[in-house]
Image (cartoon, rainbow, N blue to C red; front, side, top):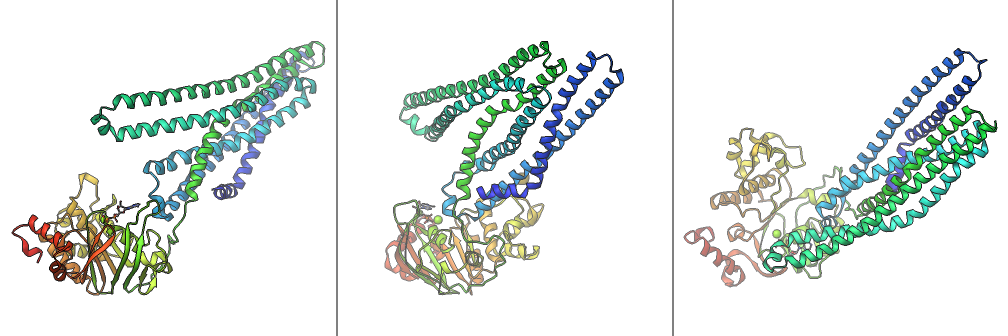
Length: 582
Ligand SMILES: Nc1ncnc2c1ncn2[C@@H]1O[C@H](COP(=O)(O)OP(=O)(O)O)[C@@H](O)[C@H]1O
Ligand SMILES: [Mg+2]
């Protein structure tokens, strides 16, 4: 993260320098009208000077005002440009980071968190950084330039008297900051506690009502809410104190300047013009002091957002080159040896002692109830999660030694979630691979048995999903997703529970097409339906992550055990249509 900030500053060095110079010029120009006003007043006392001198001074004054305006507009524009670039750059990097991050890690984040990184945290960082740079520069330059002008054109003693209360108030403000920081932290913790409590209560509302727990929940909420109110009050008190110190310094400074200044005029130590000019400088000086409370408040918020973004940027990345043009081909022999696996966050094994061998051109069927570990096995094959060396081999090579994008380019994985992007059917089928033309895509939809339905849609293959109320049925979605398998020339095809929403006739034809397609490929079919896997060269039955039976359809039936149970259950459900199963 720090690297990113440094890069951002490096990238905008020239703009930042121009901006700082413009701020300096702007502040200097701001002091000029006060000085000139003082001079004009002194001219008025000096009748030897003619009207022309006053007119001349007035024109210069007007010119200066225009210059102040121009320098301010330009510096503000530069500021806007830099801050928008910061937002864009951070969002780009964050999105890239998300794509590159390990699936295991991404899954630990909540959706709401990711969105708040993209919106709130980045904006907070932008808000503080862009203002912090200009405000600190303005603060320092303002103090330096104005104090210098005061000493130069008025009087050093008066300058010290006017500045003293301001310096004292700055010290008081700095002392209050520590307390305020503590209160901010506590308020944040209390707020998070309350939000989590509300979230949990909403999620568990049925249970709460069923067990008449409303009163308990309400009391607990009241306590938490009261804690939050109390700490919020403390925050507001500290913030108010900051405001009081700020105004006190400014007010006292002005008072002292008027008191001592007028005395000096009476004693002829300074002119009336000097006195007026001095008060003008004091007004300019006040401005940046008023920003201190703002800076403190936003600095705290910035720190929190910065830390959250930093944690994201530190997440472990997969070794996948996003824009690689890797075209390495794999044959498709898969060998799984003694694979035992548990997810990083869980304590129990999801897979135990799995041994599977599939040669290219052969097919494997996996059957097992929900949660038996079928999808996990496929996730490991795709390197979505890390397995130790020596467990999974493709073409005789350990998958840890094969580039991740090579593996994913060579495996066509049709997932069980049927996720479709809100774009055209065409793009959903060729998914990130724009090498296929419309005819090829249409051809693939014939094999996946969705051709006729797409033809009937008004925009055909270019129909946009989700637009004009176009929503596909579960079965249609499955077939659209399956079309990808017929388009791709991957050597390994995986169908993970992808036929569940299809009617029997469609399923039969589709499976026939798949068998034709995968004659020379490696094919894995995961399903709970016997009809989907009965033709496979080998079938394994998974139970609690273990292979409990294996063989071909007929032999497994003959065992009259686990596989037979699935068979029997389904035969009962589809009584009268036994032929599908045999
Ligand atoms: N990302 C994950 N982190 C932790 N546990 C998981 C994760 N994904 C799945 N599991 C657990 O692993 C087990 C197997 O899940 P899964 O492979 O999806 O089963 P199946 O595909 O056979 O239904 C389940 O108990 C599930 O809760
Ligand atoms: Mg699954």
